[in-house]
Image (cartoon, rainbow, N blue to C red; front, side, top):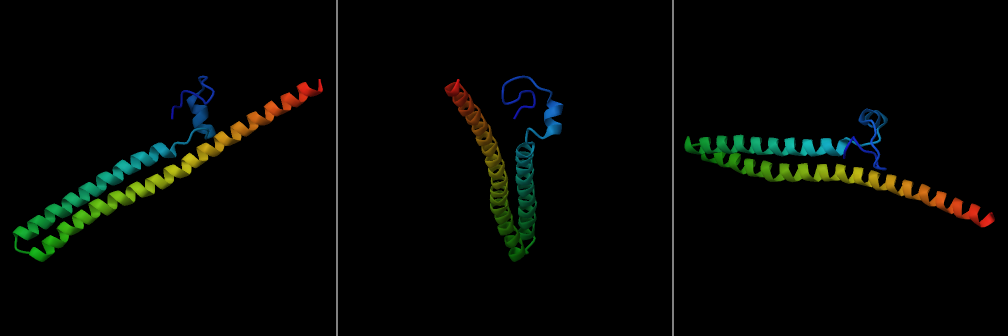
Length: 122
């Protein structure tokens, strides 16, 4: 996604594209959200894991092991959940992009058919 170029390859004003909603920003934002979500999962897992280890060494074995298991669950399921959520949002925007391309191709095809009909009459 570049704001400096339109689909036709000519240079355009990125501010006008931004304000006219020609380009979608959400896919880029979703990737940032994924990285932040993944970072949060890792951080929470580390804190829970360290807390669990401290509890194990202090003699609270059951509580410590529960925290260690929770850390693994948060890391695995949190990362998987982040990936699935972000993929679904990205798929929705890819469908949007494909629908736009189909609309452009359909309009171009209609123009070509109209020219052919005009040439056939003349």
